[in-house]
Image 1 (cartoon, rainbow, N blue to C red):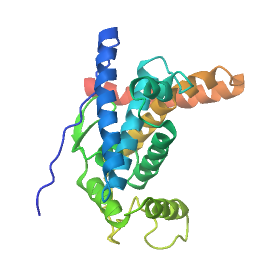
Image 2 (spheres, rainbow, N blue to C red):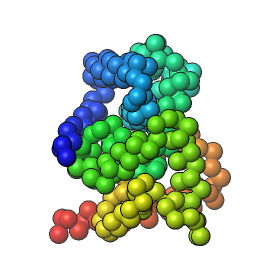
Image 3 (tube, rainbow, N blue to C red):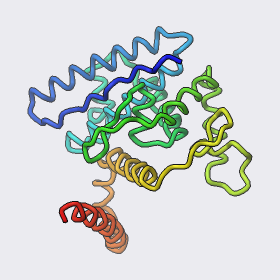
Image 4 (cartoon, rainbow, N blue to C red):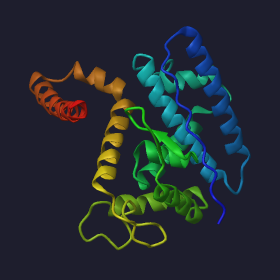
Length: 250
């Protein structure tokens, strides 16, 4: 079997200077426009290319919200405004359809940054702390199995429906838990405690970054009692992370 070519994820530099932003805008606009052209032109592999395009939108949308003051996606801000300015040939509603499809597909292979990387054909991914790690082989295999079975958007949507219906429910039909079992019916190897911890935190951080703008706004509207409870929970998590970092210093 030919060895899959692995590509290295290119980190987006967090340089907030005007020139750096302009360069990032141009680079990502070119990449998105190029991928959009592939999606439109492809036939046999269109579904996989469409999902890849959707994951690119997920990544860039998160970066826009994080790096530019939490622009949340109004008419002239966030991903919608950015696409209108830099990629006017991309139909926004069509792009959002691909983005939602990518979100569903990513959930079926565990979610988080590793799933997003695998769906783009990347062999490496940066963790929230900046470490570059290999995408797990089984995640890549699960992605390949999905697209081997789903040769249409309808089939992919059906697979997601079955995944959602069976996920985490007692008495679910055999084979419906797609996080623990491959699409070929073979039981996946159980995750180690370290792998489970990394996935859990990577997914949490991804969701926080994804909804950062909304969380900032919502925090200002929370009743005091809810704000106090949320602060306590988040502080306890931060304290646990700090304790782990302090262990490394000893």
